[in-house]
Picture (cartoon, rainbow, N blue to C red):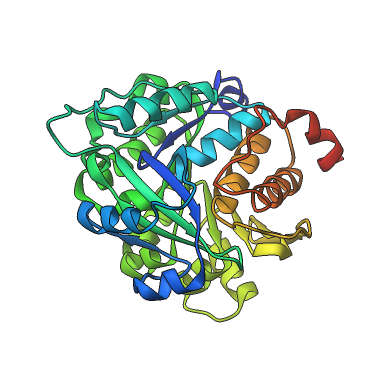
Length: 338
């Protein structure tokens, strides 16, 4: 399929990920230590564990958002002026209905059939942010682990320029199959494949699998500096970027406040970040990916797309939660990318 045909497709991105309702709050460092949580990472917990933590937070202000890593990326895409279709599994319960309405109001198409209320509940992610802006996540996957290949709408996928799949799907059997099905169908239908590692713990557990995914399917890879170092087995970010460049034609490697590296056809370009005072780092990588996906599907160069992604990430870390409140950020694009 030609690049021109791909770019003429009506939908920018087909996103696939765990559909989670994010429960956001601020805590002190002592709370993380007291409950022996994995500081700065994501821990899978059962309903009882998460319920116990929520009981301890009854006196706190809690904010709810439709979330999950890929969903946050899709929302950033929409806020940039792009359009997308999202696949994730929710239950026919209050959280599932909240999720559906919230995502649609954000401008993303979402029509996966909900699972019966008699089964597992809609997944939830408790996001705890400490004073240093680090976020620690406790996730109860719930019904999201039943996302199956049959939930992937191939007709909608075939209308998209890119598919975007999150690494978190690799943690349960059915979503793993849905991940591969999306990639396979993307290749059959001339849709480019973007994949994100999502978290260092996934890279550690599934290094060989991720190597195969990147080599066999990926046109575009998203990862952060820690993930790529772990994936490549190197302490050097530059060396790791060079190794990634031999596996995939295009990669974006985020490096916190320093910005990101764009690796294209084995050429590495550094794109500086925007210095800001962060209060909450949750969603920074997701927003970055959304900005980049908007850029590369709407005529920006890779470096311009990276700059826009850096900007969205710098905005998100200045607020609580994984996304910006603004319905649209599109009026800022020309000012930021030049």
